[in-house]
Length: 478
Image (tube, rainbow, N blue to C red; front, side):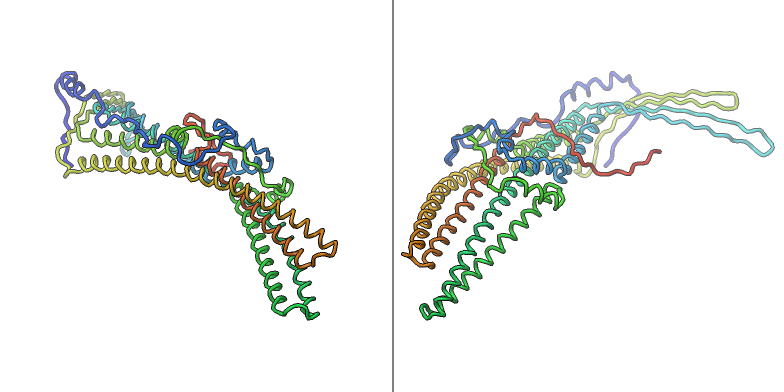
């Protein structure tokens, strides 16, 4: 690029006035928040209990001290949250740097030199100088930079809240699955006992010649299959412990002790009433807020690029003092300099086109985020409604199978039915119990999914807090 820079000799006000009047407004588009294309109402059935205003204190209404402790541990020592906080600090520093562009730059220097010749006396020379410069923000480049940096800071804060909501939901989901896993293990163990009794009875009948040998083979195969299912379920429980250890940062022994001291039941999820329309829910989602702020930052960057197409004026001044050999000298200078973009091979225009394209990309990503947000809530509502209906049916089936098992046990004691028939009834009851536990687990995790889809009670004005664990720095003082 070629630029013309020269000292203005005419009076400063005469030269700068036309430029100042022409460049009093920042170039580039003035950002307007886009309107989200959201449906007027939810298409999926809505739950009708609880209150949406309870999102922020939702975890406390579980009344589960183990879950509360896990949530506290995860938030206090999460690498994910620490990373999100680091991004906030970077954005704050970027904003401070952008704001500094509107202030003058001043630097100073000083030196002392002793010089002389052989046989002569030494001469001490001292000098000091101060230099100042200030680039006038005639076309709003600094203002647009600040606007962009401020939007990026807001986006990083929203990212931190999104990470916090996601972390809480992930910890709760793993905890609920762990509690359900323990119940499933207990049920599989009971089923294995039943299968073992059936195998013994079948083998006795085979030895007595009252049953075919294939019946014993089938019984042993069923026992091996049930044993495999039990081992797999125990493995799933161990994997959930490892996952909780990773999320919370708790040591394995401490975590197992904490889990052992709590209730073994699946925690009951407080209900949420989704009475707000989709457009209101979108304002509660931190990821949607972060994406919208990215669009605002991209819009401001267009103005930054466009400002480079125009001349820039910088005010420069300096003052110097030197003393030595019984004399002193003071010098100073002050004046504006003008830089004109004459030819750069199209680089500056290309930068404007690139900024405009980046805005289009950010806008498209925001639209996609909005659609995903609406879809996630709709899916969570459908899953929750389905799980609720299936849980009711599974609960009824489990009750009926327990009643049938009680009748079979009474008949067996009375001698009117055999052991095999009783064990079949017991396994049917246990199978119904396995399905009920799985559906109860899924229903609670569906509530957690809905909590996350609704934004977890995020508020754009909510404060962000630094993590307790910070990266160590080995700083040295000069």
